[in-house]
Length: 240
Image 1: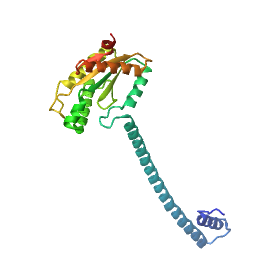
Image 2: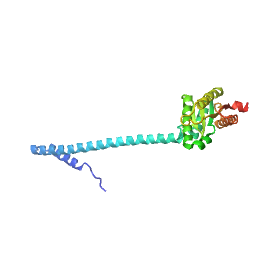
Image 3: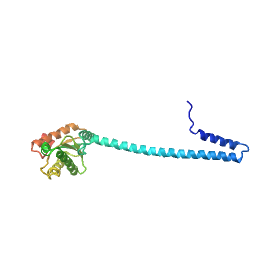
Image 4: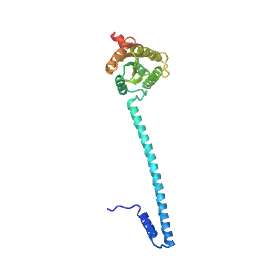
């Protein structure tokens, strides 16, 4: 199949103009006719070129907008895959991943806490009230931490705080401040009854096993539960 020459008419007009120019004694009418034809075709090419450039620019803008939207959607999906929908804290998988990354380079303390008698809150006031308590608790955690550490929601009413570079004693003191920030004032979403939390604290050295440290913190948390709740225990009080 022969290829179609998109500029066949323009090429023929150019050839005729060249023939007039090469003629030994062309008459003025031939010059004028050839020039008019060239001007006509040149004008058509200019208009077509402008339309093509306009379409190309519009297409480029649309592609840039589409790429920006795809990047935004990708970021949103990545965020949702790593964060808890209710609180915005890291989810269990993401906080464990972050902990492993930290321990590759430095030591770390971790605090495990959960809300005391949370099932009673759900049973007495309903699950929407329970969700509101969880959201407000995470807000209090963020305020108490003041930008330090990493908060993760690892279960229904259970949370973990990672503290890279912190010693165990420092983390225990911080856990005490957080406990007071939660228990010291009634929750706005549930003023009918007090909300308290119990805490377990552990430490892991650089290169250590996070799951093992997490198990020690969890054991300390249960020690706090057995000790009456609304208290802080560390791995030293469990094993010491």
